[in-house]
Each structure stands twice: as C-alpha cells, then as structure tokens.
Amino acid sequence: MKAARDWHKSFFMNSFYNPASRTAVEKAPAEALFVLRQLKLPKGAALLDLCCGPGRHAVEFAKKGLAVTGYDFSGEYLEEAAARARKKKVVLRLLRGDMRRLPFSGEFDAVVNLFTSFGYFLKFSDDLKTLKGVARALKPGGLFLLDLVHGDFVRKHFRPRTWDEMEEYYHLEDSTAGPDGITSAWTRIPKKGGKVLRRVFFTRLYTRQRLAKALTAAGLEPLKFRGGFGGQPLSPQKNRLIALAKKPG
Image (cartoon, rainbow, N blue to C red):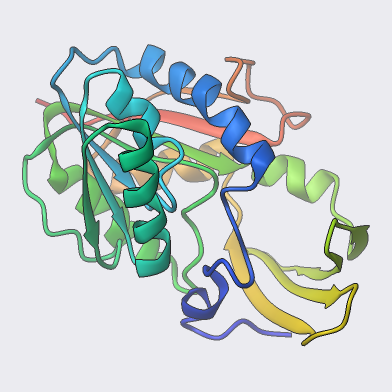
C-alpha cells in the first residue's frame, strides 16, 4: 500500500473528509483560546492560519481582534470558511495556494498550523520547504505554533486495522507503519447505498526531537512543547504534539 504523491488533492474535500464536524466545531473556541494564550498577541496583530480548512479556528482568532489570513489549497474549504466568517460577522482574508510555496515575506506576527495539517508530503524536503516558508512569512521575533499528532503516541498505540460505525457510513481504516510515518487506507461504506469511497494517505510522524531538529533547520527557534490544548506536559501518553517556535530577531 502506497500513497500517491498528490493524494491530498482528492482527500481534503467534504465529500470524503469533513474537518468541520459538529464535535470539531464545538472544540474550536477552547482550542483557539489556548493558542492565543501561547501567542500573547495584541489586538490588530497579523496572524496566518496555515491550512485553515473551513475556518473554524480562523473565525475565533478574528473574533478576538486579530487580522487573520487563512491559507489553504482547498477551494471548497475556503468557500466554507468565507461563509462561516459572514455568519460570525468577522473579516477573514482568504487565499488559496500550496503550503510549500508561501507568497509572504515578513508579514505576520504569528503563524499557526493546527489539527495535524503538516507532514503529509512523501518527501521530508517538502516539509522543510514549508517550515522555511513559515520562517520567511514571519516578522523578526514572530511566533509559530504547530499542532500535530504525536509520533511517540501513535507508534505506542498503533493498530493495523480499525472499524467504526458513523452516523451515515461505516469507516474502515487499514494502516502500515514505516520508519518515516504511517500509510493508511480509509474506506467509507454508506449505510443506505451509494458509492464506496477509498483513499490512501501518508502522515509523517514527528517526535519532539525530530520536530525540534526540523524547526531549527528551517531557521526557527523551538521554545516549548505541550501534549494537548489543556497545556499538558508532553509524554508518550499524549496524542498531541504542540510546538511553539520563534523567528530570531
């Protein structure tokens, strides 16, 4: 089983994967509050929500008075983010593009990348290219907060097959673990008939040490790591790896 180089182009669409489920939307305000407490930004500060998806965190940042730019490759998700911003009566600057080729230079006080929206490219060099783009996008002294699934937790609790019953479909997940990460096949079987959907994707697994090394190589200074949005200490028992880094200057 192997993921295609551009697997993300057919995976991140609401017809297969909806990152704005009811549960995810309900959690967003508390998650955004944790992020803002780490960043300590003044009102009017410029924040880039990299891979903003349908904007559930971006609107929360905007509600706190930040100048928010949402960046994502999915036009479908960006349309949903625009609709969410209108509903919440906030302003979002929404741009479509590839995270490996960020068109910014010294523009932002902070950049955030949330909900494991990093580590999907088959080549590590693409991850590094993304991190270097983040460093370039930040003002000197700017902060970067990155939220990932914790590699140590995933390997400790790895299961090659899981099967779940959802509201409208059955979800089957087959996974293989390699030295660089996890390759998974998701199969969704509708309960009331319809087309069975299957997608294969890759997630590079990061530990604290591996992520710190990558951030440093990109010109960012790691400041601290946490194991969840409650500020828990990082440990192999925590499924989140939340890093805060700084651009020198």
